[in-house]
Length: 98
Image (tube, rainbow, N blue to C red; front, side):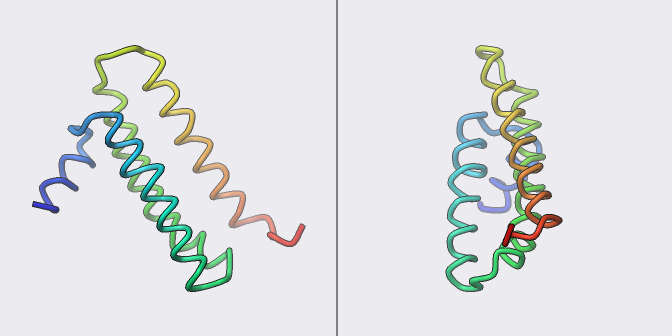
């Protein structure tokens, strides 16, 4: 059942709201917090979170492409995906003690 859900997500066959909020915002937040509590090193946290962010970005982007409602929602979702990825990438290359 979980494999089927993950396959539907990565194919963009889940709703945009579910994909964005569950696989994106909530999952990324929980993963980041748990990793930060365990590792207490932001570089390691970002290295762990980034692969999941890429996975989540693909599924949310595809879901945005399949969305049939108001055009603003897929646009906003894609903007957030870009912002999340830029933030994550910059966190890897810019020292966090600046």
